[in-house]
Amino acid sequence: MAEPKCPRCLEVICCEDTVQVRRGLMTHVDCRRPRGLSPEERAILFRYCWNHAVAKCVACSGSFRQAELGGDLLSHRIHLCPRCRVDLTESVRGHLFSCAILPEELRLSAGATRDAARKLVAQRYQLSEDADRLIQEAEAAAATLREIMKQSLRRDSMWSERRMGEGRLRLV
View 1 (cartoon, helix red, strand yellow):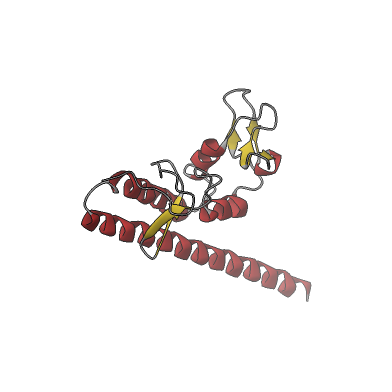
View 2: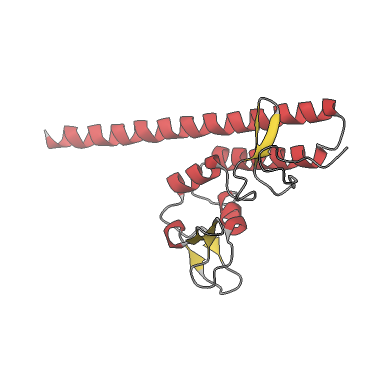
């Protein structure tokens, strides 16, 4: 079987690429940045990791928060070291899977989603029956991650409302 190609950009889909599966069709999430973070990964990092370092540069030994990372709009690269311009996307992704601030369930689900997508790409060469099962696995893992993200946001909102209510009671 031929190597799987993204039907949008016609480039080969590699195991480390960030893919999405919609209606049984596997594509890059962003064809300009095939190994970039998924929308779910970016949302989790934005929500939980904004105030602390998320990337370490081995080239210059710096540690950086998301807001400090650079981008290059001409080459469609983001998550660049602000000092030496090395791509730190994998460092940011590694932080996502190990950050102690993230709720454990969310961190594990994000890792499982990434693993399911990698497995799907790696196994795409097998019979279509196996590929269909892996597509369903990848879709289910992504749906589970989105549901856990929603539940986590609901819990955080309820906690904030409760705290605000407690403050009002004390003021009266």
